[in-house]
Length: 252
Length: 94
Image 1 (cartoon, one colour):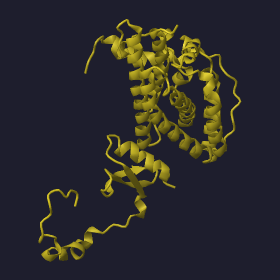
Image 2 (cartoon, chains in turn brown, red; image 1 turned 135 degrees about the horizontal axis):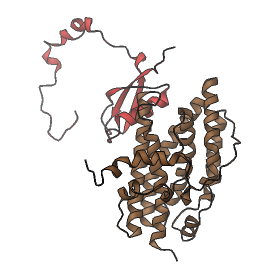
Image 3 (cartoon, chains in turn brown, red; image 1 turned 90 degrees about the vertical axis):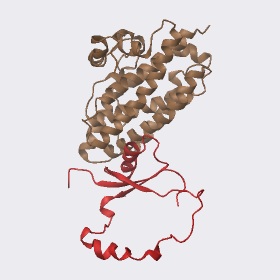
Image 4 (cartoon, chains in turn cyan, purple; image 1 turned 120 degrees about the vertical axis):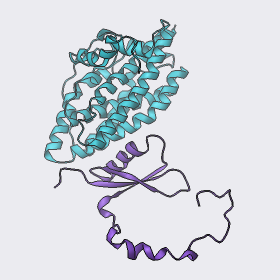
């Protein structure tokens, strides 16, 4: 028996992924290699924030406790966040960010593409809009991966190192989650393991063309979906939630 | 080699039937990047349906010093202006 709160819990997972990734990408504004790239990464962050708003609002509604998108974003503690750990990793160098964006946007692309067919109208609508946005994110990351991987000796080295840094967090992305699995059985959600073949095919083709090797770094335990996070998550939340917690109900 | 990426001029067509109009410029390392940077900077609010990017170095411009020989002779030749017939009000963008 699928309950509305279960659908909300799934929306929360996807919304948390988008929210935390948006927060990390937003950190790049004024740090990217050129002003134009500041804008590009900022735009991608805003796309993700838009997805997060829709998903968190829906999660709050289905939960039935009267929590808004802001309550969920700003007033939850670390253990209540259900995002994948890859989203919370601290900002590394530009190549590492591109590696994360490639991996993450390719994952989101496969996910949203399938979620468009969900029997839940709201999830289907969010996915239909978001899939066009993440197609662009994936394209942006792909072109940079090719440029850096097949660029200079230094850019190749950094791109390869960036991939090695994010690779341990892949396993978690494609792990079975009991909630998503149950909902997928009813045609409401997408079961993550089924995304892996298409994801692998796409990313492998990009790495091949960019003359990069498939990294062999072993997987970390993960656990973001269960609220287990890396040491970096607390710092991220402190920055993201500071204003809302110091000045409850602040408006502008 | 200069540290800055090359400059590209951006031309946007706001809708079908109109011509591309110069919108500004962007820095980019190559043409695909220039196209995407232009998309991010100049079409965020649905300003366009088509974008051209051209390396700024490929543009040959008239010089301000040549202003008189280039443009002044046109001033007194009113017969070149299409002012001798009426344009129907339904015709837009002419």
